[in-house]
Image 1 (cartoon, rainbow, N blue to C red):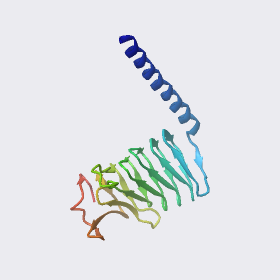
Image 2: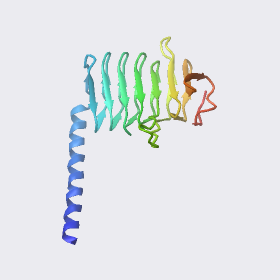
Image 3: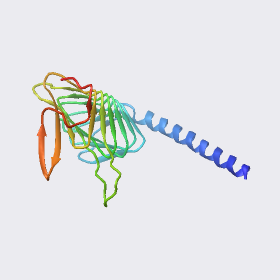
Image 4: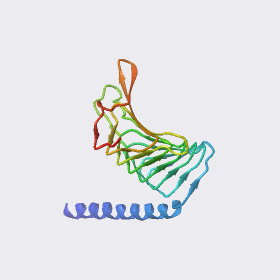
Length: 192
């Protein structure tokens, strides 16, 4: 019995190392990659590093994206417990954080960041809260930077600078209520 347990453990560990090597190779191939997908969506379920999302392009991240630059007309959607770290959302760009995903140290320079929760399906009880940590929201070239947090989303330690807005939208009895002051949202250490 121990022989089988040991073999299974060795198999699992070697599989992990192979996946790590493959992820590093993919990271090298995608490093500094520019996406121009003409309205198509590209899915990265492992890692995306130092890429650009150009106009009319979209990227869906279900793993990790780092240092992504989202330009005007571009969209990064981080979902299914994925994480985006150190992204820059330029004027006219959008970043969606949904289905339990996390954004860390995002800089919104005239673009928009949207944070949603996923409500349970089929009367289930599991709620997937999405979060943003340490975001900096700034207006740029006459455009307002926005962080839009929807009911159930969380924003922590957000810094709202000149030309930036932090907006909380709460669903209440099938109507959407807009709050400039975020007293109903779990906000910690946010600076305005």
